[in-house]
Image 1 (cartoon, rainbow, N blue to C red):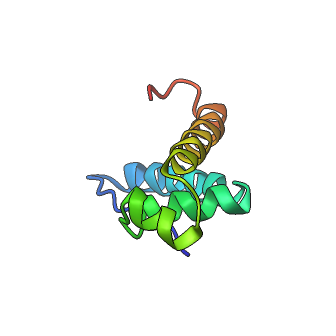
Image 2: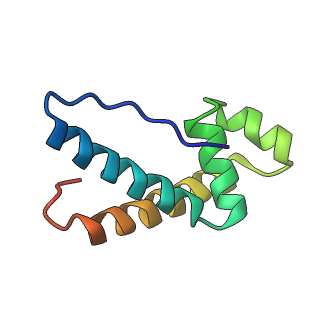
Length: 88
């Protein structure tokens, strides 16, 4: 499942920086453990509700919350590593 984000910049330099940041984000998502990545993408990309995901995967909504927290922490860690001055 590809990660698609859209950011628009007013300058070529800005576009290059944004593309680099998107690439970093996509790489961070791809590096997530498989189950964590699946749940993250179902929530963020497919816009499924936690209840729907729980039914599809046969897990609890609490597990989805835990996996989303793990995913967000791991993604933020990667982004912060590459962009330490970025405020997230």
